Image 1: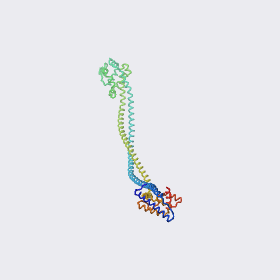
Image 2: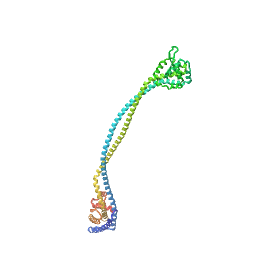
Image 3: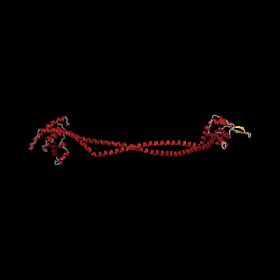
Image 4: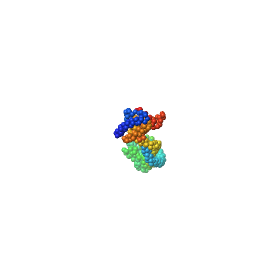
Length: 466
């Protein structure tokens, strides 16, 4: 029970006054109506106990009711502030949403343009790749053709070089020591001297008496050279003087003696040298055919190198454009996602705003009523000490009296409470102070008259049982 110290002192005085006035009312009631009521110490104790219990209950009950109404008002205020915030958020989101849409559209347009550029460069690269592939095919075909042509001469050349490897110094010495070598040996060595660009000796022909070319003397000198065989192995076969080859072909190749099989009968060393000369002639003849093809191959490879260099530049350009486009797509995706997030945020704000406005709209009419109820309840709470004291007095003393005597006594008590600064309702009603509207309605449905006196009697009966 919450009660100021000054009110407690005043309550003691008022309780005494209620008891005394009840005794006086009892005498008046008996004198005027001949009906006797009894005011006992128990009545006084009932007054005090009822006051203590009912004041505590009503203070808790009224405080809870105030909290409910004020809590409802607080919620309405919260929703009002929330609505204002939502409206502000929506207003702030709109320009952001417009900017996000414009950015997304700009990205999409930029991607279209960049995609077109990429496709254009890609088409050029594809075309260049086709051309480069064709050029590479031509170069490969030329290379294969050259290799095929050279393949005809290389086996003979390799065989001749192997034959040189089989020659021994003793074989060379044997040929060199011949005083009157067979004609086949002389022909072969003459051909070797011509291949080495060695000049012949001029000697007198015994038969005619005229000067003729003789290669036997130079041949013996050549055979005596320690680096002779190695010079044959290292011979520059790719740059043979055309005049040398013309002489070999016209003066030696047609000779019957210039045949490895025939030469072998005279000397195995001369056979190897014969094979070497024939291999060089075949290689030179083949090289002359292959040379234009090699030149054409070199030009094709040069052009292919230029094409591949340009193609690589285009590929690099395409890769850079594709990388740029990929980055642009990522930025676009982020921009679109940002726009979608803002749209979702705005949509959620709109939905929540509509719900809040609907709730506020439904409870808007209740705001005034709740505010009035809270205000009245606070007034009621302030008046509870006096009202509960009056109600306790009615329960303890005034149950047997008629409406007139009861009203007369209550009016006197109200004045006395007011005089002693105990707040109370001036038009005090027991039913409104202690009555439960639901119970009162139930009583009415079960036959209790609806007038205030009958209602008060019902309340007195209910609380008088305690």
